[in-house]
Length: 266
Image 1 (cartoon, rainbow, N blue to C red):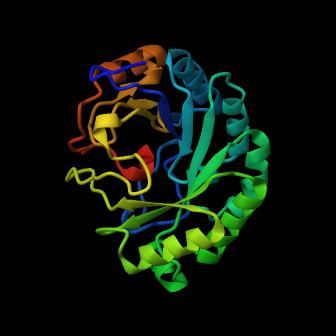
Image 2 (image 1 turned 90 degrees about the horizontal axis):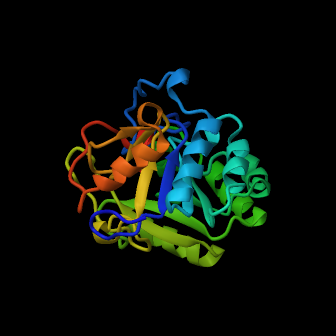
């Protein structure tokens, strides 16, 4: 399917939860968040239904995000449901990696193709500070588990302030080179100020070639991360919500004052 700017839209990012087991300083407030009620969050069956309709309309690439998707109970069951949908050729997940040591093999068996793992520094003390208590050992264990499970390519998402020439980013780059990983450098963004740029090593942030829609954990289809438009799949039905998002997808992102990275999925 194509939007009004003749961009082919074939990529759906699905946020399955607004919860996370970390409190990264650029993503969540230290005091935590007002979490969605259980009744507000889409069930796995609802998510799969949206995905099936989206695939019939032209989606062939799906990414599971959060929050942290691995804190959602039974997430491998959802992976299996999505993997069983004919037409999805790429099923991936973005995760902070802290629980991958436990779930990587199960996710692969369920049908997950690959993972992106967030890692901004190789310094354990700095990692603990950036994530407000996270353990880098758990992430490194998760990375190895992903490799052993065959979740290739394993990509590392590293948030930078200015560029990949920063000291932490250079160390991440070398770590990836030595361990058969792919590094992606994401400039720190601000939804409310409209600050975003093209991902180094990836395609995100390039509005001219944007191919994605987003489904939030509470059932809103977003045509753009940096915009306030959203269309409720429960109120409108999945097909109409997707069509409206497609019709109203902007040429370029601006600002978003309604959502946050932790509940949209970045």
